[in-house]
Length: 625
Image (cartoon, rainbow, N blue to C red; front, side, top):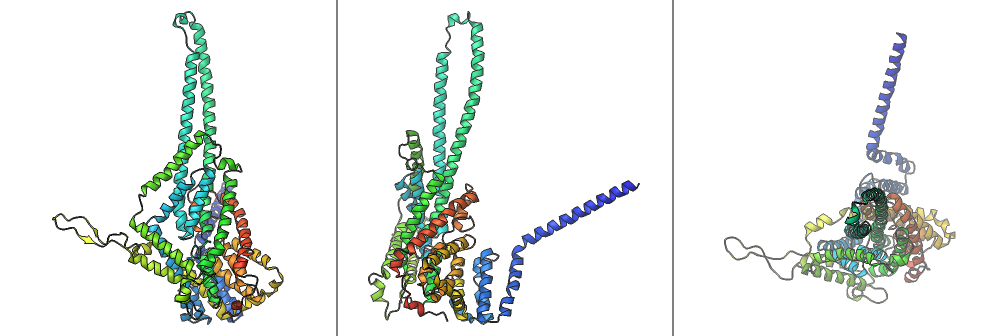
């Protein structure tokens, strides 16, 4: 009886412990599921001692910046919602009044962003970007190295004008279609070769095994033995043949997978690289322009579309070529002769021909250019020409003498972008002034109606990322709050000892820091946080502000290592060919190459373009207290 009681006691204790363990595990799972809510409520409370213990404007502004930085890094709240914190916290902490804070959310740079996006939406809406992509691919061909180069050139060019995310979302499916056709053509050609070989072997066997009918009865026993031996040989040959086919198929799949990985990465990487070439190509570029105009109001419009293009376009080309070479080495091997299709046999040429036919078919399906595409293309070309010629720098532009007076820029790049955007809502999508609908059954005259405009607000409402407009505004509000509170001045004084370090070393270290930081957080949030600090540091050590602000802005676009680092990476990763380790290995060296390329650019042609060797007078006349 005692032993049974002790057994029951042990069983009960074990079950009780198991139940407690299950309850604890369930509790921790529930707690992890609600981690965002806990972070949202606990983080402000844990940081609250900073403004309470140090009751100064600088500490209060620092509290807001640290809080927003943590929320942006973890994305506990949507990025745009976090960007609205200054509207709430700056007035409550006595840093800025509400009217001044709200004015930061729709500045000239925001309007440039909106205007550029409206044009990009029109280009996407009428499929002009797809036509451009397919036309370039038809020119470069489908040889492995040239195919990757073609996709990189098209993606980079498109991302100069439309969003990196939209470019990647459009180009990755085209790349997958070409690769699938390439794979299916390889498989069908190999199957044809196998069947031809089998037919040849069968014919040989028939010739070798031919038996004269006259001798068949006399040599029946001997023929039976030969038949058994042949059967055994055939069975062993079938087993070997199947094994060889499996090996061949495995090698084919491995080769296709490597090419698929290279193609996916080339699209998402070139989308990020292409965005740096133009001022409106990616949001961090506009953040820099906005911060320079905000922090140094007398900068003589040093950053405009033309000056940015002159600096960033060559940088983009160098980085694009380096990334193309690196992706070739990593996914195609170092046999460049083979990669370029030199000395290939007729089999490979047939495969390439079929892949080329896919692109031809896609291009043919688009038909000829309609009037809407032509109109959008004309307006797009006019936009680029007006941007370049507004104030080229080396000569007076059309706005210099006609509109800008007294040394003040009345017309900016934003004015041009909004002008062309408004034209998109005015110009019709068809050349004829009226278009006819279907005839009514009553036999009345056709109902006539005007053709739709090139762009309507319904399309804009679906595609416009208003969250980025708010995010830009939040960055400008932070910069203004740092100035008004005196935090920028305090940071600059603390960073003054850096004056003893050579400027190239400072720029290189800051580029590496930004490139690492942007892997974990939004590139817009990264530039928004870093640029005001870098401006204060440049002023403190009497270094040209652009010498460190320009390279760090470009480094914010070097998000190559992780799928979550930027939307183009996530889109490429979603197709299932890539593993995180693939992206990390390819992106690590590309990050280093990017930082070195940017460092080369800032110490060579940019050094001369922006006169970075001297401390400019406009940097002294700053709004930082």
